[in-house]
Image 1 (cartoon, rainbow, N blue to C red):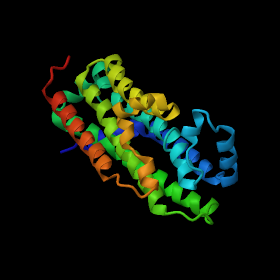
Image 2 (tube, rainbow, N blue to C red):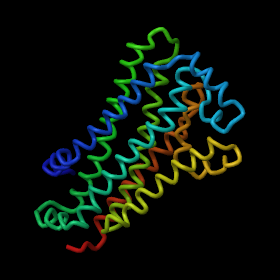
Image 3 (cartoon, one colour):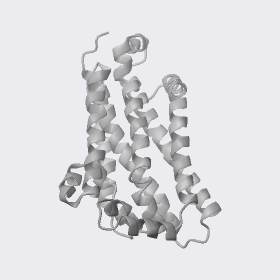
Length: 261
């Protein structure tokens, strides 16, 4: 089904990039957990009261603070950049540079190559968010052990963020499979996910722009439902289905399209 040799080569080629983004995300998460102070958050809420920023700051609870900061900003944009860069490098960039021609000149089937690359991208995200969850739990125990909250909600925030990045990565991977030039792959594989991020952000900042968030995939990552014991099973299911379907389409497109070999 996959090539262990290609997987190892891909892992080695992308490990530094993955490690950098994983460390940065973990540090951001750990620092935000460590510095949380309800009194400080409450003071900030009073300062931005009656301004568009009040919508972004949201709840003064521990998980409310994390959901409106890390899980809406840093925790989204950082893995998004990783996904965009990696998805493009796995297929389109190799076709563009000509290295894919060398790879496909071996007995390895085209379907094996594209499946292996897709498995790497998904596996790298699983590893990234597993580490992020572990760092989050350890940071809570180390710095906020006296706060009463459900640790499972924190873990589900990471699960939801992973599913969002899984679905987003499928978009970038699909366009990497469709186009033979990196510039075209990035135009759509980066442009659409970034537009989703901005649309959702605009909807949060200004209530008059709330309609934009309903055309954003990011809206399916409903942090409010997670921390307030709401029902988010449909949103999670949709993110999973979108990811699976688009990855499958990308693999099929690459298998059947003409390549400049």
